Image (cartoon, rainbow over all chains, first blue to last red; front, side):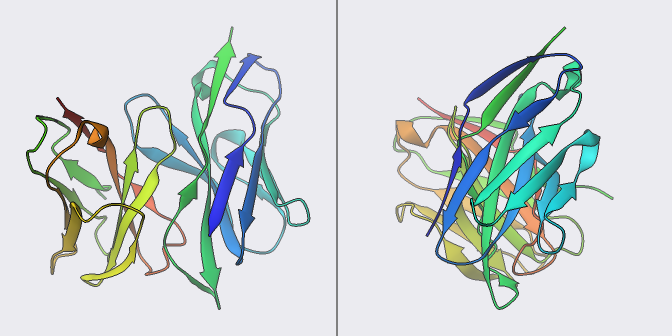
Length: 117
Length: 113
């Protein structure tokens, strides 16, 4: 079984400041890792994903995340946020074995990022 | 190309009724997954279908069922609706059974009164 913990339910930040949204996970099998963003009354949009290779992954809209296997973390960062980044962000894991993913995402509770002018 | 589409957008039902939600995946995608997102929480996995076969089921009661059609579209059915079934129901499609990357639709907002 997998579980995902997003350590902050709300993160307020001023425009152009850096931000980090924290995500820890636990799993008995290997997992792929994802960050999704959800704007009000919309579905989920993929920001970035870690499947293998370099532990630092870059995504859309200037976001990046670093996979830390020993700490089972996958924190999301952006060096300078904009008002338009205000949204809810979800960390998710997808278990796999032998290179085949089971196609079942387990999500964290979400972090609401609010960017103030 | 069109993304994942879901219908209806909003739905209001009363307790005990039945509801059918529909999803059309991205063209070429053969896998469809369903998720329930209760207000203030992250999405929870309900079902995954690939090539019209159920490949995974989350921890939901038997009142929830789904199917996938030959054109890879899918329906989620919920019987005997409860107030707690009020949620945003999200459909996601992917090109592989494993769903390395799932593309989400806008969701169907179900309100049970």
